Image 1 (cartoon, helix red, strand yellow):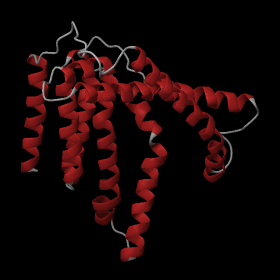
Image 2: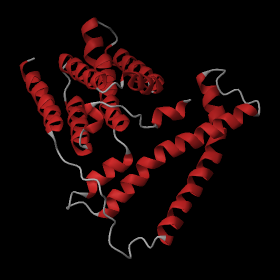
Image 3: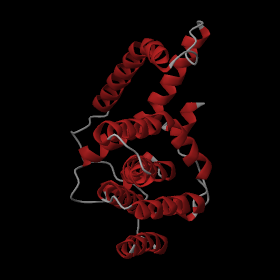
Image 4: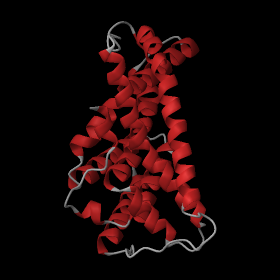
Length: 247
């Protein structure tokens, strides 16, 4: 089911033992570098770097499943850019096709993939605990971030329930053209929004019953520390990015 793509798997690999802050920093560096570069060879190198990280973390299958969820959007980005070039220039060549549509599509894939490996290898609790140890970040911010991250699998599960409920009533959501499918999906928005609002009220009531804001922030027995694998990852990424200046 689609809901399982939003759950954090468990693997006994060094990637899952890394400090969440280092993983987030690595994902941010790769994502930002992909946005600001237009060199096709550099983008290929970044893609191979992400592939290597997912391979070492034994997340290749989950990564490919996550990319499959964005297949329609990836195809749409490519087609829109091709149409834009056609009306702008009126002709095609392999060089132009590589410079614009393929490059833009690859940028999007790298941007999604950079944060996918972070999301798949980091639980919300571990990320929040590491963020709370940064003294300059308020506790309210880390709590908000935790709730937002936890809401992703919850909403995915609620979406799957509504989806199965509509199918049990005879609504064929997977048949017809893309426009027809979008119209059918619109019938799922109202119950999904109601469930999301209800969940938010439950969270607010829970925080109120636990006297949030009236006592000191809670502490954790787990302490995130930067180890040798964290330094290896960040140094490896910096080395690869340094090599891109010679491409």
